[in-house]
Image (cartoon, rainbow, N blue to C red; front, side):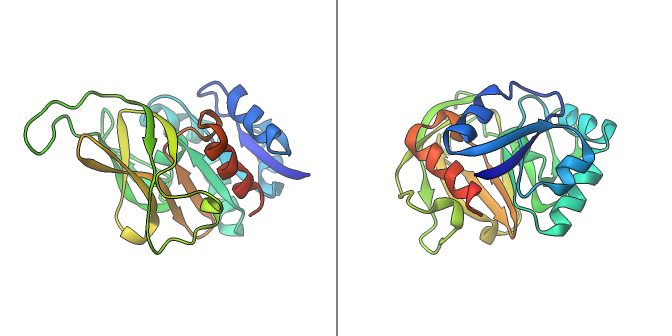
Length: 210
């Protein structure tokens, strides 16, 4: 059985992601205990809410330094939604806030208008197709095909500095949004895999196999 630790930093309902991982055959531990996290074979950083609040909670509980040690060890880490955003250098949400800095880039608002001036509704809610990079052979995308749909719910988007860190995107209002990002052992997922049907479950199974 694959073991995974889900970090509890008091942001969001963890029930659905835990159920998704368990459905995929994982033994899930939800904790904020530093030693348990450091010993974990793989770590999930979920999250719902704002970037400044998320970083404040990680720092308050000392989990930012724990995550840096985890990443340095080479442990696979998956950030989901807000957890994905926190992996980047900084965010413009409410105020410029420094992130964990694991993947170069910045979190920005989804543009409010298309190129021809039409208003874009935010947040981006619902199913959207994954646009997989033609040269991507990423481990998270095993048995997942270009055009499969996943479920999104967000008003801000991760903008990696380096194109090679983007492994899948989606289009919304004429704008290309990063759906999956990576940097070595670090992975970020903008959509909610636990709410994305068979495609999302395949992604979670792939992460558990890393």
